[in-house]
Each structure stands twice: as C-alpha cells, then as structure tokens.
Image (cartoon, rainbow, N blue to C red; front, side):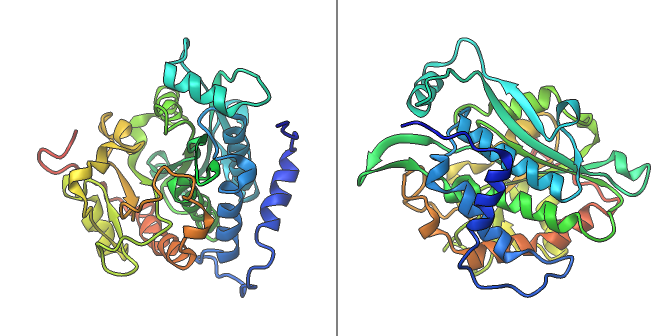
Length: 339
C-alpha cells in the first residue's frame, strides 16, 4: 500500500470533516468544552487513515503534527525545540527486537524510522514569579499500529487507548487558553512511543522545556473514553490515589475523581506518569478504564466510545485544573507514597 503525503493543512481539513454530520452546538462559553471539537479530534486520531498511530511511525508523526497545529491555533507558546511545537526524540540504536519488528510491520513506504515525536506547548502564567511553577498535563499519542488481524481487522485504532486522553489534553488546552491566564504556567505535552517503551517520555525528561524542579505536578490522561462500571456514573479514577494529597484535593474542588478500583492491575506504574514520579514529581493518571475487552485489540474503535461520558469527563476537569494553576498550594507525597 502506498501512503499519500498529507500536508498539515490537509490534516486539519480532514479533522474538520470528521465533525460533519454531528449535531450543531450552541456557542461555547470560555470555560466549556467544544463538543464538536472532541468528536473531530477523536475522529481523526482514531481513524483508519492513521493506521493505529504505531509507535515511531509516520502516522504517529502525523498525529503529533495535528496536535501541534491545534496548539498553535489556540495561541499557545511553542515549547518544542527551535521554536517549534514538536520535540523529535531518537529511538534507541540498535532497535530492540520488539520495536524493530513493530516498525517493519507498520512502514509500507520501506523507510526505516529512527525517531519518535512529542507535541508540546505552554500557556505562560500571568504572574512573573508564579509562572515559573508549571502544571503538566499529558497523554500519549501512539498506539499499536497495524498488527495481528482479529475478525479481518488489523488496524489497532486505539480510540480509548489513548486517543481519548490525547483529545482531553487538546481540549483542555483549548478551554484553558481562553479568557484570563492563570498565575502558574500550564505545559501541555503529548508523548510518542509510550506503548513500546516510553521513548518520548524519556526524551522529554532528559530534555525538558522547563527545569523539572519547576513542575508542580503532572496529570496524565489515559483511557477516559468509556465509563468504568466499578464506579458511580460520570466518575473518573486517579491512579495511586492514596499515594499523595493531589486526588482528594482536586475532588474538593469539583473533580469527579476517586481511588482506582483496580489496585491489583498496578495502573500507577503503567503509564507515562510513572517515569515522572520516579523523578520526584507528584505525577498520577486520570482514567476510567474498566478492563473492557477491546483493550489492545483492533475493535478499540470509535464505535465503542461513549462521547457523552468523554465530553463530560473533560469538562469536569477544567475548573479543578484552573484552580491548580491559580493557587499557591503544592501537592505532596503521603508517607511511603513516593515511588
């Protein structure tokens, strides 16, 4: 199969077309999520045309460029290298066998990929001193790409994992960039190659756009496209809830989050937040993954996304994050909570 080369403008046009046929939405208040935009973001990221956004592939790169174009359109400051919204991260050499096989299966243009890509932007705080303190909001861009067929489908779309979390970061960036700026800065980062080794995350930690000591806390968004039946309706959970005072404090300020109901799954250690937590940053993941059977299967697709739940979930985090970026309060690890 030959891939057509898409310009960044065509990516944006395609994404806009994903919203065609959706019900029209009334004008949004500055603190509201654009429901049509949520559908467009997820519709593009989880489309068959991106072939599952395999780690380190051209399609992952296109997803990063799409995110970068949105960050720029929101008026956010570039936080990548050389004044860009992209951070290019080299993959290890020689490639680990699993990653090499993945890239071979996911590149029909036969070009050996040597990099992964992060997309990142910053909303600079309004207070000169407080702006040195950074709230980090993250998700991962990639999924599993093309793989073993199930029921004739070999595209692992990754709609919930983690196009839903990527969409959350994009739409929080859209909402928080409107109106008056918070006192603290907010850094929005979408990592590449989480699924096959966390290579984008590791490069970010080694080449941070701000000193790591300035990051107050990290909220990762991972798999929030469907409700978890183990929780009350319209509720999210936070990995490692008992490890710090972050979750309970955000809950007091309106976040519909609770403790992870699946402690046996060790989700705190299974997302990009963990690498930051090991550096001392209070870093935890917002999720609603209810162990659904579509996890890491080709049918993790748009048909299984609960858009009403997703839109509500993203909306519910706006004010808690805004408060976090406005207050002087800093989260802390509880005794024995720091990994």
